[in-house]
Image: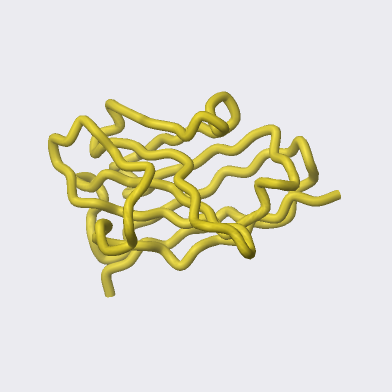
Length: 129
């Protein structure tokens, strides 16, 4: 089964850090643009960050700049989201999504679910003391 698998979520205290991973299961991520989203209870899905197929370009929602860093290791078939200075309002389920995009210089922070080829099942991040 072809899917994305997120991991790395958990409970962290305010001010702490977490690194989320997004792995391609059954397929190679290299030619895909990868985006990270999150959704908190009662709120709409929010785009956080994205990275182009070889990592040359990245994009961040303004509120995430300086706290979150996206990266990828295509040899490990993994995209990472390093999160620092976490706040209670960062509590949400975090998802990665893949969009076919070899040679693309752009990556999306928005879009309907149907505009992406694969979604992960999500990983819960809870920021609380």
